[in-house]
Amino acid sequence: MKSSLVSIIAAAALAASATAAIPVMQITANGTGGGSGSSTPTGTASGTPNQYNYTGIIYASSFRASFSLVAQDTTKVDRAVLGGTFTMINTSAATQTFSIDISASTMAQGLASLAGGSVSGTLTGDTNGGTFSSVAGQPIWAAYIKNGATSTTVSTMLNDPYSRSVGANLVASIPGQSFGTPIPSMPAGAMGDAVGIRLRFTLTAGERVDLSTTFVVQSAIPAPGALALAAIASGSRRRRR
Image (cartoon, rainbow, N blue to C red; front, side, top):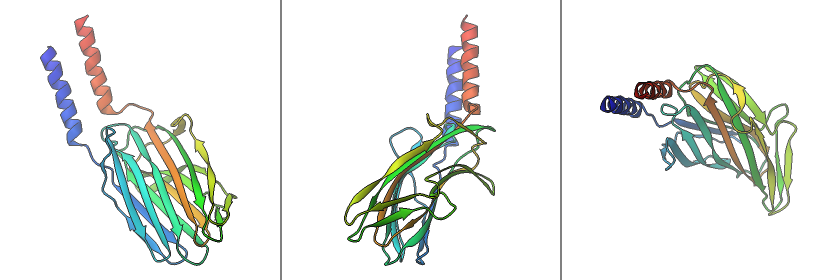
């Protein structure tokens, strides 16, 4: 019986491994100065189980953006993680409004989930100093869950009106904000096909903003694979008794 149980567990683990998928990361960035760019970086194993690293640079005529992000394989676990750092430098001679979308694919896990997230950063001024601010009526940071063609906003932070200024050649902090703490604990809908973070802000000429952010969505119901293994283990314990 023991060898049979081991075989069943091994088969379940092999099946889970076969269906594992590195999350597809998509990043788009646009500036009102006419520049735009996108990246679909390839994830590499981070050393943390089921988590992958994504790094890259997006060059455009009016800005330079770089990123170092992580995402989690939700074919193996019921917890989606999207986060890391994103840097935007306004290389133009004028103030610009930037729109950035960062998303990572997921596999739906049940009908309900818990969510949480955070954002903080720094603003670095050029020889003239400058400002990082919200666009009228819109948050700087928004997290969403995508299910098919529908995107549902889960929460927003750095809400309008928000502004941070920095002096010439100085660095100013962007104080941290969070929701769903302890992360994740805020009720949300199904995990869906992707999780994402949208950034929209105004940045004066020559300035650089570095944002550290995370968005976590965890199924409120254990994944089917976990339930199956739990049932097998429970049955084994009953037989031993």
